[in-house]
Amino acid sequence: MDDKEMLFNSGILTEEREGAILPPEELWKNKKGGLVVVECPQRIPCNPCATSCPTGAIRPFSDINDTPSVDHSKCTGCTLCVASCPGLACFVIDLTFSDDLALYKLPYEMLPLPVKGEKVLCLDREGKCIAEGTVENITQPRKDRTYVIHVSAPKNLVREFRAIRVVK
Ligand code: SF4
Ligand code: SF4
Image (cartoon, rainbow, N blue to C red):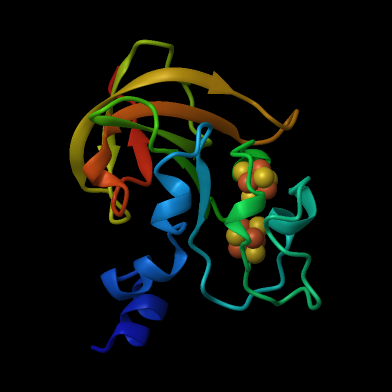
């Protein structure tokens, strides 16, 4: 199975596509608040990521089926796109959190919500547990929309960590 087949048959992004959607490293490593990572490579009629972005970092679509295009230099890490994306395909990752840990701001639509300080399982795109993280904050940037859970976890997971499992 080639990369394209893998992507569209399984819905899981493969390694080769990840590099194309991560922020540029030179911008990312010093960016307090973090930068958006968008993982939405398929043309579908959907645009809340772009319409919710207050800075134009996710460029306005010319067609509802466009795939997101990101100008990371305009991203503030506000997480409005994370809370607005129905596909749970937007994430914000802050590499300045500490020497060893990054802060991962991830969409979460399950109940119960975790609480600050709680340990949660860090999952990759296939739902496989890859580490343990600590909940640092829970926000709801858009009323009645998806919660955003801020989790500190090892920096070396930036290409893998995309969801959490609450274990209580
Ligand atoms: S995090 Fe905020 S500024 Fe960055 S792309 Fe998302 S909505 Fe735009
Ligand atoms: S809102 Fe989410 S699913 Fe819709 S186009 Fe944007 S990134 Fe893709």
